[in-house]
Every structure is written in structure tokens, then in C-alpha cells.
Image (cartoon, rainbow, N blue to C red; front, side):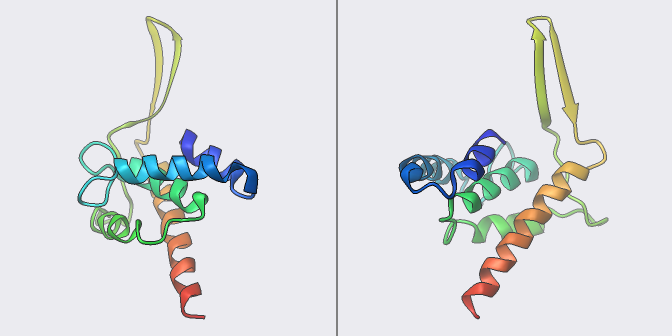
Length: 127
């Protein structure tokens, strides 16, 4: 999440292109062979990585397999799920608050954002 937000903030600043390039290289090197990110091809983590790459402005050639994996992981009801925490807050060493996407709203929304942006990019190639 942090990488995506940082790339969104610096996307239009030419002087920060080296930072965008560094983040992109890290994300690409972290991609699994099946095109996903995270443990066991997690849709939430894959969506966040895709959004970060899209924000870097240079996602071409990297997202194709990730898109296929996301589409393959869609549930029968049209949603996507994650078993990961979607955030953690460490109030103290013994007090950790955790949130889960029990209703699949966050993960599904993020995946749909990825797919929408990807479709716009692909459509733009043929205009």
C-alpha cells in the first residue's frame, strides 16, 4: 500500500523519476513466476503491486500475467478475497490491532481498479 501511495504522489514529478524507477525495479523483481505478488498469489497484494506499477507510469509488459492471474482467482460471486491482514496497528508490543477484508470489499475494489486502468491502457494502444 505504501509503495502505491508514494508512487501516486510522485508520479508527475520529473525530478523524482529515479525513485519511481527504483520502486518499479523492486516490484518487478518481487513478482512471482505466475505473475502474482504475495504469499500464494494473493489477490490483495497483487492488486496493490499492479496499482503501484501503474502509478509508476511504466507498467507495460509486466502486468499481462498478473491480470490473467487476477481474473483466474475471481470467485464465483464476482469478488476477490485475501486471507492477509489489510492493515496492522501496533499500539504497543502486546497490543496489535488487525483488520481483515472479511466481506471482500477492499480486495475486490482494488482488483477492479487495476482491471479498469489496464483496460484503459490497452484500449489506448488501439486508438
